[in-house]
Image 1: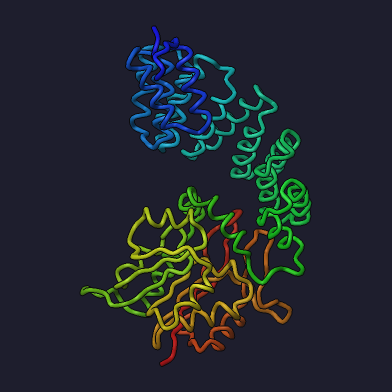
Image 2: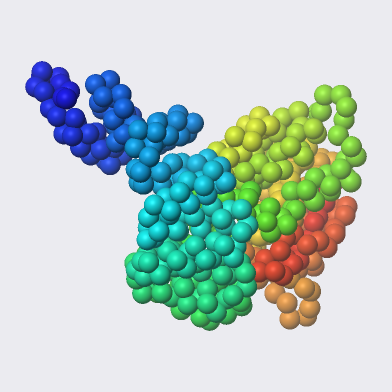
Length: 446
């Protein structure tokens, strides 16, 4: 069989498929899909064309269509192992972890030496919190393919979750030896060391990473954090954007597992200060300052005639838009945004954002100026225990700042904001330890 080029010249189906696949690999799934479709018009049961058309549809966002096409390929060719593995990959990315597990296990029945399928099985087992089984799958992957760096990283991540830190560190170090130019390896190793408060060792890892990416703002920030001296007064815009754009897709899931409750506590403080949300149409102009993926949105919307969200991360804002509830979402640096909006808000809420600011002597006055007389500011910070020797703010090796209560109160007073309520809270768990914080509600006079 053959298909025709636009010139009328006939080419074989194999040549047509190779052309379509090469276009697909160039990152042009829509054009590739047109080529696959032409093949399928001539040969509707062509298993390769069905398989690759399924992948193209997945890349175009038609995930259900992708599953159906790859299943059709497997009906024609039940032993098509690569197609079955990719069926698992699509199901995994759709969050259909049980289905993906079934697909990967079928792959491994046919090819028990397929290291990548063992790794993929580990991914979906971990997603189902079956950590011991996931570790076993990853171990098998690296046994079969000792140079498989991502397999070592994944095994390290699971072992860190199960508190087997020494073996986890060994896994990460194996990955460094295999791919010394891979930033993800250094990121994983440094985080594991920091979780064990081995900051000096983490600093050395960041120094190695710096040689690979000397201009990476994440590296620069964490080197300063681990050094513990001459720390910047706030995290740079580029650091925040880099970290949270990368984190956006998994943010809600990861924080839920850490018992993250800053948005809920801010919502409770709003209710304590303002009373229950009005049954009639709300009247307040509300800002979610550092809105992230929009976790505060549903808590603030009942009070808001107009609800704005502002964040530096485009990735986070995209998730907030998907969640819905906001009247406007803006990508902007928080202090600059507040300064540009004098007397604009009846309520400003900032959950778990000020931990990326050290000095508050600019941000808090900007927030105060953006409030109308009688309006409220609600926020959280991580807490540094007050003592005679305690600095007003401190940058920790994990990259976030903490503040003393005395410093927070002083900054609010200087900005003309009266503390109405201040609570000591636990913001989340980190490395199985509670993260102490302050939940603050303040009011502007007038």
